Image (cartoon, rainbow, N blue to C red; front, side, top):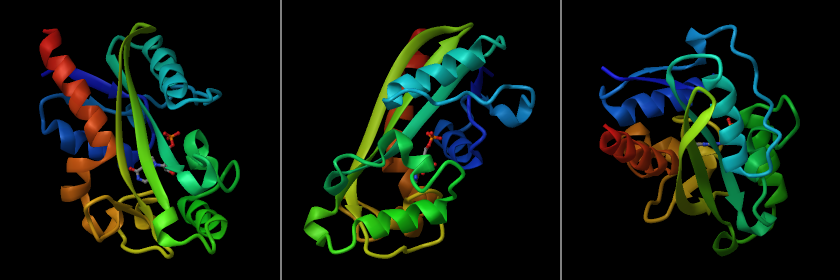
Length: 196
Ligand code: IMP
């Protein structure tokens, strides 16, 4: 079976990608590569950060490497938190602090103006060379309070278009069919299949 190394230590991202690839690839992440450096996300776009991670990690191993950079763009905040989604409430912020900051920033904004999207850019690289870049997004709205216990990050606050429940309430069965990551992953999987 072909191998794919995910340039991430985020176990939630790994679980989602493993579920999406449904056993077509042997997937590992950086938990199997403890000496891998922490790649600083100094880019100002998802593509730049994803490329930084894919190139740095693939320079250190033989595997095909897949990096994911993703985040939430909120229209009422002019696209914030965007590439700063993981550190919206500060450098070591956790999901709960980030969600609280988002709710505070959106205080008083009516539901029809709480439009947002998750975006994900995936970059595939081998031996420091970028082989492909793929993108996915999902439109939705930001709730006025957290709902649900599944998923990670901003999932309890994000209701995808066409649904009444948050990603955290909908659970992986639905989220992994329509998320930004699922849409980018579908492009990657098709490209990988065509490649050989
Ligand atoms: P990254 O690891 O730099 O790509 O940061 C991604 C951050 O964006 C996460 O820490 C979350 O805050 C947010 N994010 C990305 N994808 C998702 C998702 O599927 N659900 C909820 N939050 C997400």
